[in-house]
Image 1 (cartoon, rainbow, N blue to C red):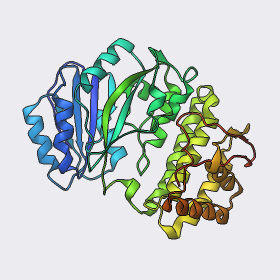
Image 2 (cartoon, rainbow, N blue to C red; image 1 turned 60 degrees about the vertical axis):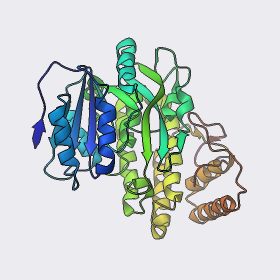
Image 3 (tube, one colour; image 1 turned 135 degrees about the horizontal axis):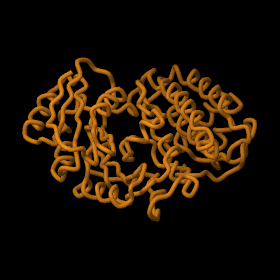
Image 4 (cartoon, rainbow, N blue to C red; image 1 turned 90 degrees about the horizontal axis):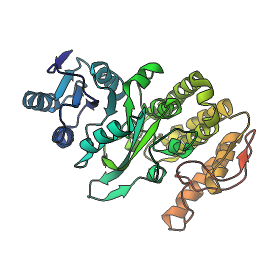
Length: 369
């Protein structure tokens, strides 16, 4: 490994940026991080053996800006392990993981630093938007949970914060919290799943910066959400790791197990139904694994499922009834094609609907298929 850096006093914030195959986007990302950074910030860029011109771009930026440290890995290890490598080199009191194909709006770095100083939170949550190749900008469906949060809170006071999109890049984390609970990224796809939720469960104080601090680029190709692959089965491994961490948190996590369970089933149903993810020939096998996960982690006291068609899908998963699921999925997609789907998506945060116990429920939601 080759590390480029200039020794200096401990920064308040380390921004860790894993880099692989993003030469077309990397300069925009680095400029958005470094232009407004000062002595309280360091940027640790991890070249994950990128096969394009990214290594040279990183070295040129590092030569011109002492706030940037570059770590060149000898072999590709994947996003989660690259983040871990950057975290091992990070010196800041807080850590922020930023993906190298995304970028920050102007004023973000000073705003984040000011919020860290004034709130002193264990975790600072950030709003984001989705930016498409045609220039369209979309507010994320989970953003409303960030509105009107005064000072710092915890999940007991604001349980809806658990519904914020599970991502590493929309939360700035006190480094000591990561070390106290031994939290790191695991290899494989869906690496944010076992990382993002435990942070909020373990945090004594959560702050919110209610402004768009992150532009999440919606790439037409290259994202795992648009890649048909067997690797989507890795989501189950990541949820196994999530529940192992939740078990380790004990009483801190106990009040939120039902919410986590509901969100897990919602997420896995999205993965199962999306045409661009699970190979069609493997969808039945994915559903069987989903039904097994449902039975394994169903809370003893049940949970409150969403309403509408999504709730019916939960019920079908609990029963392990793939033919019924396939029929629901086909009907949903047919209705969308002719513009007859009008039911709203499930809101972020806690669901409304019937309680579910032992795999039964009532209600019929409209979750993404």
